[in-house]
Amino acid sequence: MVNKVNPAKLLTAVTCLTLTLLLTQNCGQTFESAAESEQSSESDAPTSIADPNEPPVSPVVDPPPVEPPPVVDPPVVPPTPGTKVIVVGAGYGGRRAASADGGRSFFYDNYVFPGTVNAVTLENGDRRRPVCPTSAPRTPIGANLVGCCVNANKYNCWGYSGHSTWLFRDIKYGNGMFVAVGGFHDGILQTSRDGSTWSTKLDFSVENKLLTSPVRPNSTWFAGVAYGNGRWVAVSGTGILVYSTDAVNWSHRNPDIAYTGNAFRSLTYGGGYFVGGGSRWGVSRNGETWDYLSETGGIIKIVYYKNQFWGLSGGKVHTLDIPSYRWVVRANVTGATHLFLAANNQLGASGSNKIFFSSNGTVWNSSTIGISPSNIVYIPGTGYIASSFNFSGSTSTIYHSANGTTWTTRADRDPGMNQAISLWAAGEVPK
Image 1 (cartoon, rainbow, N blue to C red):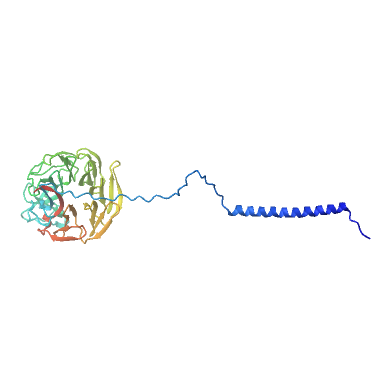
Image 2 (tube, rainbow, N blue to C red; image 1 turned 180 degrees about the vertical axis):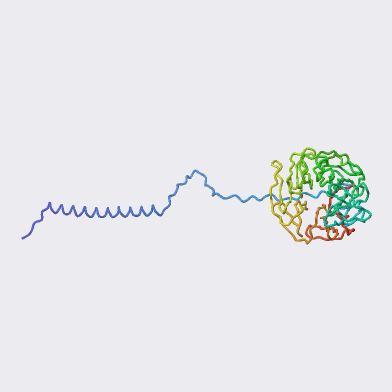
């Protein structure tokens, strides 16, 4: 018997089978497409579509570092026609010596204090009891101060530690003139235009003594002198200040503050200002009116370099900020005790058998030179000259160098320190 198939049921079965196959195929494709889309979103970074009408964007490149301008040394100015550069030394016993060859020989060399009086020793270390020769007997010259004096007017006197009436403490050149100042109990000042002819009369003179301080009548020695702003100015160890337009006729003013033992020890001019250094220090435009005076200080060695005042104290190099009247430490130069202007537009320092040079005052190079000169001066076109003296050995030595690092020495003509040179200044004089 043959079973008959119900057409309706057959149609339903075929339809369901067809739908199942279709659903299976479509669902597989849908799941696969979703998985691929998810993977693509995780791995591919979004991109931007460039506008073809806009110019291409250049990559950002850091600019090259800007090199600072090179430091150009100022040209060496030759001497004025009809003149020559000389160097003049000054120091103990009124010694003045002038040289046209950088100090290797002197065309003038003289002193005031007699050479027969050498270094004075003291009985039991008492400065009131110097051991004096018969040519210069012991003479009171001030409160608790006694010297060996050649004459009764206390003019030529010698005291302890190389001090004498004719002890020059500073010498400068300016406005065609050398001016040397100093003293022991009284101040002294002498001038010269050629290094060999010196003034014989001291201004403010009483028996050729310079000036007596009202705050310390028995001692008015001068420690620093400088020229600038059309006038000479000198400062004393007791606060007296003197000024002059010609270094012949002088005016003075008394200290603004009472003398308490502090003293000026140096004076420098630059940029329209006089700056005095020492245990006290001050700033002035004319030497008469002082913008600032301080009873405390400590910076003695001061030079004017690259439009700033530079000072040295305790191995530290400072600059002076005038608006605030503050010394600011710029560098440590261990062992340095003296500061000077050097060749090639540099700043120089010396001490502890070394010499130091810097082109900016903050970074320094040092060389061992085996000597410790007390004063170094650069003579354009010639080189450096310096000197040193030894109290205990009573010796004086002069040094020369073409570059500041290699030095030659020669003994001074006088072995005694009573005429030792301790200061130098260079300037132009007529030929």
